Length: 113
Figure 1 (cartoon, one colour):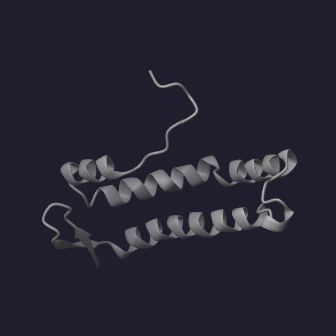
Figure 2: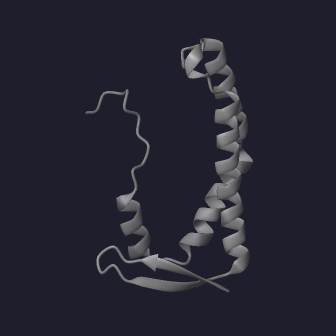
């Protein structure tokens, strides 16, 4: 067991939570895969500022294809599994409080009703 510290946002007190090393390694591996791969995709498709700093339509298409290939159904399954596994260490109230603080993606181009 590994002990993780969670910060209570109201009392600012850290609470150590014992976590299975296997669960920690599995979740960390998914985060590491995403972080490094997204950095590599970004670097591979970056356009230097001395070249205008903007992608051509073809460059943008290639980047989107790379992102689409990366976010495969298998990766999405792994992400969901890591979330479920780590979520088991939180009470429903804790999970809800954390979820309430997250800045989720939303389609800012669509009209809001």
